[in-house]
Length: 446
Ligand code: GLN
Image 1 (cartoon, rainbow, N blue to C red):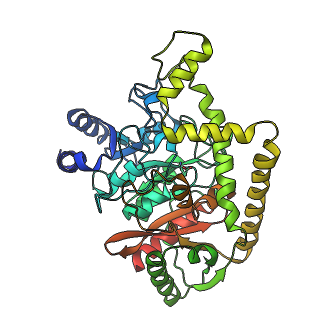
Image 2 (cartoon, rainbow, N blue to C red):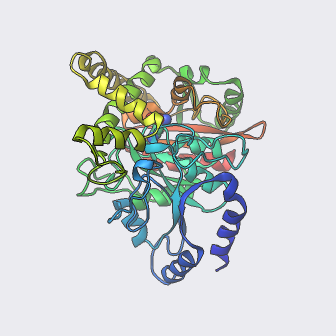
Image 3 (spheres, protein in one colour):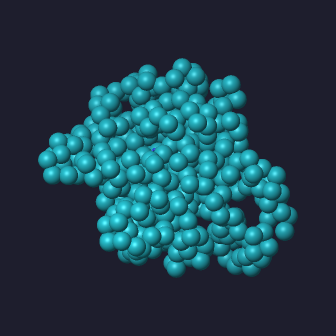
């Protein structure tokens, strides 16, 4: 009772300013479930968890922060939700996000922006901003986000929490509302590395309902891994393009790591300037194809049914989707159209391969790579939303891991003028558990 009351006391006090939830369950209902689950066996028996609203939850509204799905109640649970429930976790609510996970600040949500608990004038990052904010505000200790190009790590960086973008294929996407299938993964968010590891071990694993999942033999409960003797590469080209405020904090961390005996060297990716355009070309292409299913007929927003099919389709989509989503559908359709396909889409796939190959080479020499998670401090609300190019540029450091399918963690690096700065750790494919173990050690020494 105390545990649930503590959580709801904070929500009642802070939520009108923060807006972390799109759907919050009733306290009585949550309390009752906690009381039932606490008697069961399970690694998360009676533990509250906040879930990003892109993940399907049976009988609990799932909107993807879009008017298009404002009233959608899924008749099934995503695989990750089934796994959490079978360990006794209790969903407290569904968190705010950028519409269809398209954005880096949680400002494209149909349900209004989420504010950063550290500074209410600023964004908590995105697109899983509601999950990051619900951790930073102390509503919950664990949450789920999704990461297509940084959506777990940006909020983790801006809210001083931990987030993992898992190796592609280690967590089932069944029940995740699709944005860009080849890039995205559901992943854990938490307030420390230990909880991050526990949550990852629960949600990961092969799933017959998602053919892209694989068996990862390396998954286990991670233990702290000392960094003495570890070969760490600093991604210099990325560090140099970040704001001075951010690099100051990251340089402090680098000094600490080196005084702990890590072998630290500068590394250059060499092609990092192509990562962002390649990412956005691929993401928008996949988005335009995925979002074709919202036709205003089968499910979702369908206010108009008059006129011919094309009129119905256009009116419903015109009103159901927000501006950023429409922009991406149009750009994605353009990129995939005959005549431009080779010029943009195929070229982006080639760039993706080149980036992956150079990372493979780098990981032959280094155990992990580090960089700032975000090149800037948390932006003020309103600063990015009307300037899409500026917004996209925020993802420079994070999209690399999605293009290359490798795991990446954002963890707190420190504060600059009372604003959180995130440290990003990247590892080779399937080194997720090791990466969590290293972050657990770094957490202790910072
Ligand atoms: N900001 C990036 C985008 O808008 C990443 C979003 C995400 O990871 N879902 O595509």
